[in-house]
Image (cartoon, rainbow, N blue to C red; front, side, top):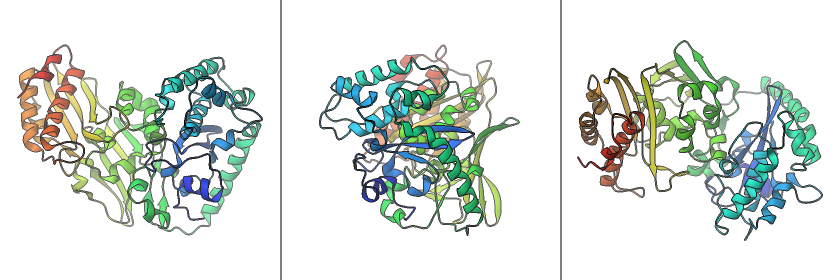
Length: 457
């Protein structure tokens, strides 16, 4: 079986499991949602994922659960809640909602159950009935004591009995896979991370392409601190960032920032390295890490080399990267006590959408004077960019309304937005200035007033 085909196509056309539906094929609708079980550190963990963007090569050694895999002699509590609350109409989206809600029940951490279904779209019910079903499941899960998550789900018939043996089966698969890799010939092809954008753009190409699947490469995983630097493996997912204690300590409002980045199933799949190498002018994580003065490490036949992220983008979809090089890690200096960070984004939909314009800012303020500032912006030029002139202007300036407005004017001179489906060029110029103001209002609300947003320069 070609590792480049999607899990969705394998499920439906090879396994004939048609409960998993074909919807948008772009990771937006959630009709194809499955659960992916991974065994690591002597622990079994399940996450929701959109199978339409997941290459088969990324699920080796994992437990893929479709809606058929939840079958019990009768309806399970999730399915029953959907019926009880009238939460299904045409039924096309229902399997995806059931999978996402079941995934919530298999998590051993506290979470908002509505967030668990943020990647699922229904065009019939108006959502309120689905929300009621979700809340009833959430109430049931509050009775669970911490401990054996899988055991409780089996006990409550949320999942079938066979789940009790999955840990042992995956542990065996992992050891067999490690042994086979020792004897395998290394063939370098197209580097594939989570596939969440690559399979939208090049689905047909990837089906038969020679690829190097990096998603589960342990050498490219992990988030750690070395001295005053944070180092992130390129295959770390957006969810990994969100769940990292180190990242949450560095960025107190990380949950708010990450909520602007796609949906839960996509965040479970999308990798940081993939977002950066994709080179989209509006890549959310690219803009996030540009403002942090990040450095990337590339590894290839000639060895390793470091490149400042701001110098990585040479032109539209053009990178300072050789064909044989793989992005290995991203590092950035951890902000000090007087340094603040914010990320903003505007899109046609508030959440789960591609940005019209996005921006991030890191700023150091001591005694009301700005000693360092880096503002990044996306959607306002052919590459994701650092606003070098606006950032430089702010250094050694007093933190006040006048200087913020002047920085906005300078930023407007640095950018070259184009009119496209996400907005006219003048609209994007306005958005960027508003986002820069939003950074200052959010971070320094006692100094910069909210009504600054209404000031027209």
